[in-house]
Image (cartoon, rainbow, N blue to C red; front, top):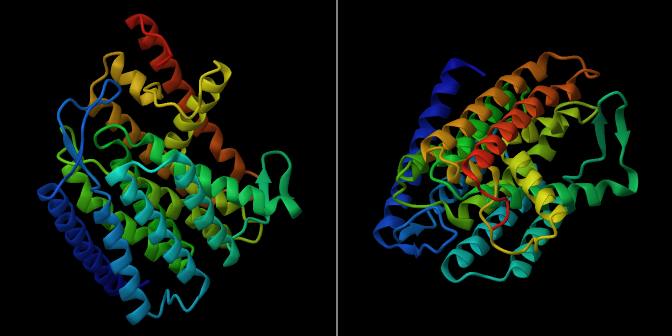
Length: 351
């Protein structure tokens, strides 16, 4: 990519960021209010649905890409269906922000969108495992892909409960993914990640603590779905599909917290569909860490993971899966710190 082309892309991304910011301001002026309850991190009614800004910025970028650009032309027809499925996910999320849809309906919409992406050919056929190498998934491939897309969608959604945490993490992750995709000449992934980064750059200033607006399901479910799909698309960067690990690595802080919390609650016999405030980031805040400090920690995780992703590009295929080890070590250290603070504060892990 030439410097002139990069400048044009960044200028267009700036326009998308401004579109996102303008949309967020409209959502603040005509709010869908989120009224606090005993499990909420906020104390005053606050608008939600600010994720509509990144959604519209992304869709606008894709529309221009389809009409004008050739380098990442979505004449790769599979991506048209994926984008329409993502728009449907956003519509369901916005409806949920307005009137609280049932969990079953949300899950059905996510699974339906995932199946659309899979029907368009975005299916993981192999995974590369440490010490084993590439493993053909065979008949398990559709189930693994469906689990990943729905799981990532929900993980990002579950983690969106603190000012600036998810918005900042997604901004770093999408910017890093755009740079990596450009290096690998994966132009659709590059364009999609750049548009997502622009959208969250326009949203984030309004979501910093104390937040003027929350992302809402419209943004978190949409972002989780799109990044899950881009992970599968990124698997095409190499023949062994080991590059699938790039997006999970970039989102590892969010995925670890969501996964650990789910497993811990299941082990404690809690109802998994019941509202709670025992994610690690929530426990850290309840144990005395400031909202800004917790959000900054997750931004730091994302930056560290971005550095690991760059390292990932230069490792041999046999070593690439092991890049997850330092990311896991950092998250285990974070878990230990939070557990220590929780114990010192005399808090329990239920509720």
